[in-house]
Amino acid sequence: MKSIELNISDAIGFVGEEKFKGYEAEAVKGISNLNNGEGAGNDFHGWVKLPEEVEKSGIIDEIQATADKLNSLVDYVVCVGIGGSYLGAKAVIEGLSNSFEAYRKTSKGATVLFAGQNLSEDYIAELQEFLKDKKFGIIVISKSGTTTEPAVAFRLLKDQLEAQVGKEAAKDIIVAVTDAKKGALRTLATQEGYKTFVIPDNVGGRFSVLTPVGLLPIAVAGKDIRSLVAGAAKMQEETHHAGGSNASETYAMLRNALYNDGKVIEVLVNYNPKLHFFGEWWKQLYGESEGKDGKGIFPASVDLTTDLHSMGQLLQQGKRNIFETVISVNQPDRQAVIPSDALNLDGLNFLAGQHVDHINKMAELGTKIAHVEGGVPVIRIEIDRLNEYYLGQLIYFFEKACGISGYILGVNPFNQPGVEAYKKNMFALLNKPGYEKESEAIKAKI
Image 1: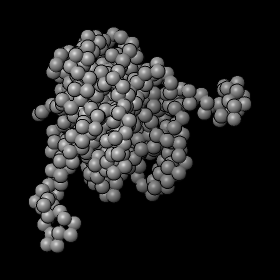
Image 2: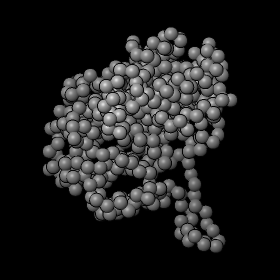
Image 3: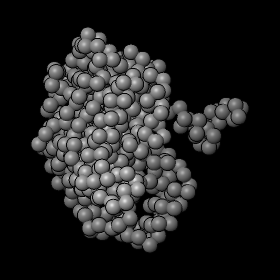
Image 4: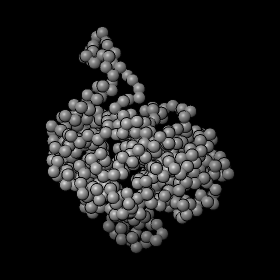
């Protein structure tokens, strides 16, 4: 099978070959750091060798068996988690599912729903209402078990599930993905007898899609996790050594060259709406990894051609501080051909006999030409098809490039010290025990 193809010909001219090559030494050092467990944040390098380790470990069989058991007992599985504990699974499931999956019930797997990714009372109440007469199970994902959003959702859903089927039956359809030894969720899972999987200590949340965090809900949804991991393993092999054939290295070097040339916003572009949540996963990966120490490219995403009718003007003629990375899918899975029409009132007969995908590809090409001429560098990533194997490649490609890029940028790509600020304020405003001084201080500000 093919590998993803990276095309930088419509971007490198904006900085020049010499400036681009100027990042090579830092990129080579970044690759060495990742491969050898060195550099800032090296205690979170477990994802680097994860694909080959997962393939050899037998964990895929255990995950698949658990998914099969859940699918035999329930029609819906609620995946409870936030950030990296849900975005990777959501991205893959949405990318591989029929666009109208939510409106039909298939026999391939349970329908996976998500909770714990927000604090909307409407959302959780409507989910609970929907589940009242349904056979459902829960996958709860949290290292600590005390992260507010998933902890709130899990408490509500666990209470509902036990009320609907009984405490004894509920324990067989609740799976916890958590820390190996410590934390509130590990304690509860041990006490209740839940099936558990471990979140590796050396893999951060945004890099965890190829652990049970992502693989279990993806398997429950009926997707081929073995092929997903195989694609990632292929990209692990191809990005191990530095050099011109290392697509992750090339991408990391170019995006830093563009950043230092004033292109401070990167827009991830897709022409297939199934990739919408892949963009959401990508935004966390790069935003949380690079946005620190007063540095970082701001990650944004658009779904084209849809957003050309809302964001197209800004992309074409707005402030020239952006560059685009386009994910292009070579072959669609299905076909729709434009028919001829006798009246031709819409003027579309010139397209009669054409596939919709051909029109989409011409829109993509035309947009690229217009944006490049308008001063927007365009990087293009092509995958042959939208399937498990190529999504696995794409996931690992971006992960490896993120680590390299962060080291070139001069930050620790594997910590996230800034995410605690809002939590401290929230706990103070909610009068959480232990936050009395903070509560007094923050209330004086409002």
